Length: 412
Image (tube, rainbow, N blue to C red):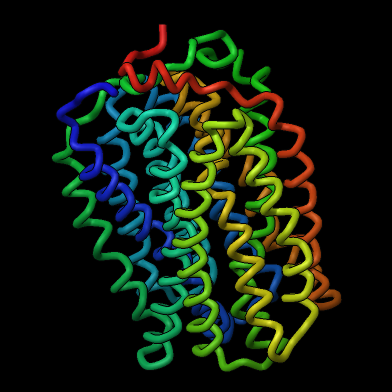
């Protein structure tokens, strides 16, 4: 392995911290959404559109940032993104109408896209290909863990101090970590890569013929559709349909999500890297199988109350989070270093366009006309499609050269 002075563990810790508060800031709104809906009376469709608008700006921003990040210093871009989303989160506390809330939420999306588009390519240059599922498992555990803490933070503080108070607390850490990030050195692109550079892996035009990239991306899009819709509406579902007190619903669902996000992401990363020694399509196969097993538990969680509901939510969510690290590692390894930020931007654009940009609005639309239970069945269908796509995608996975990695060589 190549020796560097770039302190990869320190960089990973700072970037993971920022990613954690990225998701905390985003999900606080979900936790307090019923309280906001009382103050700003709008339909479920309108409140679902808050997330659609967020992801629309997120998607549109990502491709521009990706191209820029492949041509300039990535650290500066990430610092600016963290500051933008932290400022927008802080301003939510002084929002007094739905239109302003909508604008503020879209600005959070712009700032977060600026960070999330760039960070994985930065991390990939610090760790070898065969360890990236484990490393990205740490970075991406924040998807669920940060979301869970946002639920708990929003639910607990808003119960005593009103829905605006959590946003003051959630905004502050982003500024501190952005300042720390500004002092970290930036690694050279491709420092840890050993896979051969082919036109499909190293050019933007080749990206659109890259089967490994597109099957991982489309599978991830379907998972994102499911998780995005469920995370936005689950506290409301527990409160409205199952008649659980809102602060208790946020606490229980937040605790389940926190555990599953950490355990699922770390276990999925460890399992994926171990399986990679025997099967080059391991990242795809592990994800496909975990999603297939999740389907009956998802259905049970949506349709059953009483003592079976929370165990079913727990198992379904754990299996969904199990694929987080392998799928992100599959995307990162599917392309070369010099187009990696652009590829991640295309990945983000696609997974949100086909995923959680519209699933909360669609579920809200179905809910307005029938029920949240029926709306949630769209997530079950999406997970089934993801499993099918990823089983097919295993044939395109690149073969990692473990011997070249151990020798510390780079691609030629």
